[in-house]
Length: 226
Image (cartoon, rainbow, N blue to C red; front, side, top):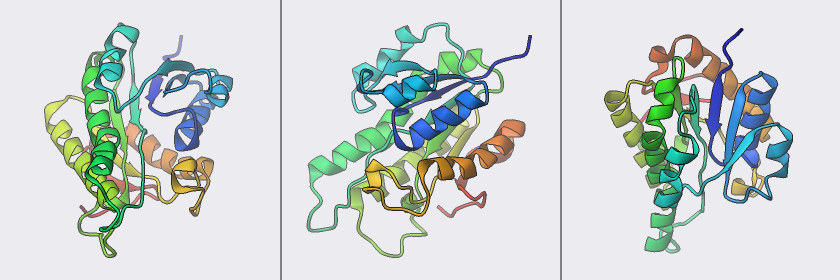
């Protein structure tokens, strides 16, 4: 009997997350996808995924995963949930900074920590954080986007610490500007098109996880500066 891999995807009910779930379901993976509103996750349900309620901005919701997934192996964790808001210097507020940090950085860290026992049950388990080129300090040539840039830069820093602290390789993956609700449907690729690019990177990651451990990679396969 062949081994069936299990992928866990946060915010899998729409956009890039739904595209990931659809692709992995077609590949024969066992897919576990999260949504804040399970009843509204109809497209995710159509993929055959197991759906779990999760709000990555709520620590108690994250910690509850330990009981919900007790004994469940996870081979691939995709921390996909994220929020984006264009807050320039005049518009940005402390509350918006905190909101985006909770979802974009704190959530992925504690989801990963909570699921370490599940990753330990998987085969060649690996972690993928969906980050952004806007989290690159060296690539910031336009300013603005204070909360998003800072929260994604923090996510990148967290991933490097995880690289040293957990036995599973961690990849930082930039999907590009994707046409989704988060971007008001502005971008150069649909979620499916972006995932079709990123899966090529993930396939390499599966074959040789350590080669991309702690790397910050563009969807087209080249390494990004920090």
